[in-house]
Length: 378
Ligand code: ZN
Image (cartoon, rainbow, N blue to C red; front, top):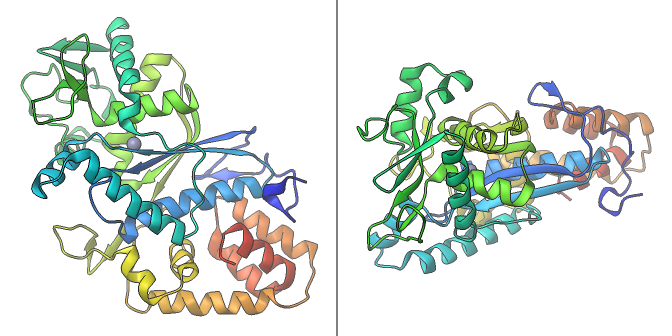
């Protein structure tokens, strides 16, 4: 028996469903988790993404698969550079501190360390190669030190209306109104850097990677031409993940880049998406001061992974009460292969954690212990 899946029945790798479709897998299952830009504290919305990606990998291991997880750190980013300047800090030093705080929150929430944690700055050479490959295949063009990826078909392929796509592109800093580009949906793979910005030499002058190109290069560099699961917050689906996939596919000819996507539902508070500008951030570190980490983890997992949700005052206490009931159920001597099978079946069926929890609470014994262990709640 595999050491990572103690007590688990093996042989369910052909029964996995994810994001509404069958996803039979062959080990290792490659996970790319779109990680943090280390410029601010971790709020509950970030935590939801990483806890769900962690739980998804654990469920695949329960099903008998080996997993290979890669969660990047976007440590070259204009948002980070600006945040560091505002605080009078050097961007590298500032990023390292934020990464440390993020790691502390993740450890508290029992998110397993990924197998790979690439940093954008270590993959700049691959971004340069990606830009060169896209230029060589005619999928990019260079203009005044910027290498633009031809992305006019990206909104269509992502199933987005062009006006919605344009609004989101502008929101995420892709500047669709920039007159230098041939099409509003062309985005920089490489762009020139000013003196105060991070920069590296390239055939097109000193510059730095575009955001989508960084994740494309890190995925290529660590996991190869394709991944099984691409996970990230749902707000990253467009433009970020759509462009990441389009760039990798254009460079390699391998399609699809991701067999399944796990766009984790946004967490809202006080009627709006959590954002510093809205003033409704719920910080993981604050929640952990008053609640046990397993209760916060269960709060995130006892729901649909996909659906956006709103945090209410009583939610963490309710999760803590559910956790106590599960602990009580796990303490009974019940041994039911049928219940164990049912819990496993719910988990591999598109990560139906609420159903697995109900089944485990009712059956107790080994079924409850299996679930608590798999979801890292015990
Ligand atoms: Zn990414």
